[in-house]
Length: 160
Ligand code: PNS
Image (cartoon, rainbow, N blue to C red; front, side):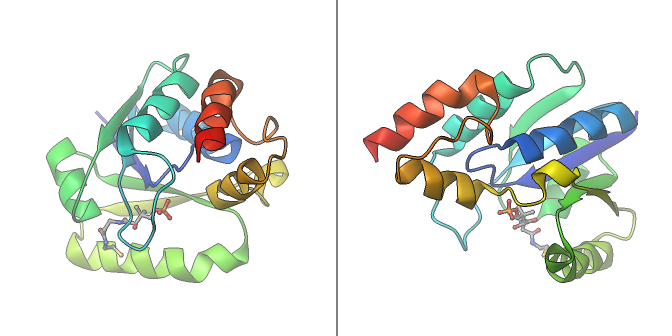
């Protein structure tokens, strides 16, 4: 079975993430969306909220699993018997950091391949931090997040 991991903070999942998940699901037998709390970031949503948002947004895709991980990404891949890391690239500005991570992960675990999917043009500007910023300031985020989670994300942001 060809298993891929799509890792990230997903704080919250955006339509850009969902686009990458849908496309990866067509390429691999199973795609595990690996949710972690990035130590460099203070998340707006709890890990379980973020995972719940992903599950609701991907309910129509059969070969998706949502899982949490801490520690090294390559250790998570080993535990899940996965050999591929999927990453989305929005712009060349993403590339340097992503390329560095791909090289580090290759060094840590030579069996693992990082596969970059280029973001669809209509999502190149989109990020979770943009969604959080607009939501906190009372803007309309309906074009940025999956419809299945819009009300919950809005409600959670209002409580902030
Ligand atoms: O959505 P994010 O926060 O940009 O995702 C970053 C993530 C989760 C992909 C990255 O922080 C990561 O892989 N963390 C796991 C720790 C690790 O393995 N570090 C070594 C590789 S540089």
